[in-house]
Length: 396
Image 1 (cartoon, rainbow, N blue to C red):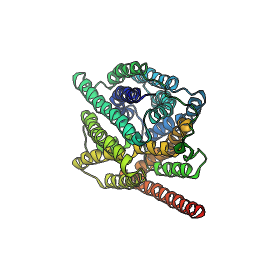
Image 2: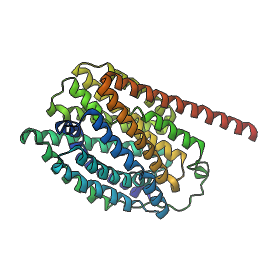
Image 3: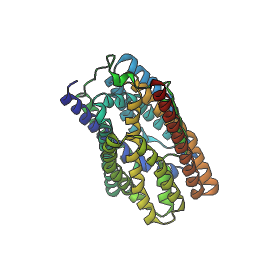
């Protein structure tokens, strides 16, 4: 694929994510309060978030493997975004937390189908020296949509007397627009690559990839659903109609920081930024634990947005550094599965501790888990460095 078409792929997939997140973020920040309004407890919210994410995550490596085997990306991108689009309007009719769980489950299945194939397509649409920038741009477009989504939701709530169900129903419109852009995306070549760079990359069973995956899973035991951040804001006195606004603050900082740190990772390497992201997250959650004023929560939501600029797109670029292009959809599937499976106990732990001991201890627990993940990643880097040193000594 020529350079012009490669850049077009990145822009088009960015537009797809922009409109998808415009749709998703119209409803996402409203779901916790909606669940509370129909009688769900904090622990139940944790169960809903955990089951929807972790169960759907089991399908990610399956779809990723199928994408690699069939050498098709667009098929799974279409399937994923289509299923998510169809699922969202059913929230309009939901009257029980179980109905919300089923809807979220199918919406997550859609994400499981599209994410590995989409990320693999992004990674093969640019040169190795621009992967961080490409993923950073994609994340920024995603977050720009996430800024517009809450704004639209806020306008609907304002003009239609806080009608949350109407927001759910209208979210299908931008989701449908997103599917339109997929038509113009082009597949990239997945022929066997015999370049020296590819030969040096790890396979899915290599220690660098496995250790990174383990560190991410442990870290994410402390990375419960963002729904709890919204509940924390409500606990400190945030009005319902301002929920979309505080979510906008978070997404603004995320959209600004993602391309910045993505490009920086191309220049200084992924590892220093990944280390920084682990430590930064732990500090932010500890500060959430201590926060008891509304103004501090507003500040922390902005700071939390920077964390996503430091992490998600960098993690994906790092996987592309580790794994050859013909196995990347599978690798991204395993990566997202690890995160999703960790989210299940993470959300249940967070919700249960919150119900029993309060939000402070819930956030402190999450902070400690993230530090443990950081330590494992640090150990993996030390082991990898020692092995590289030994190999260099043997070759001398």
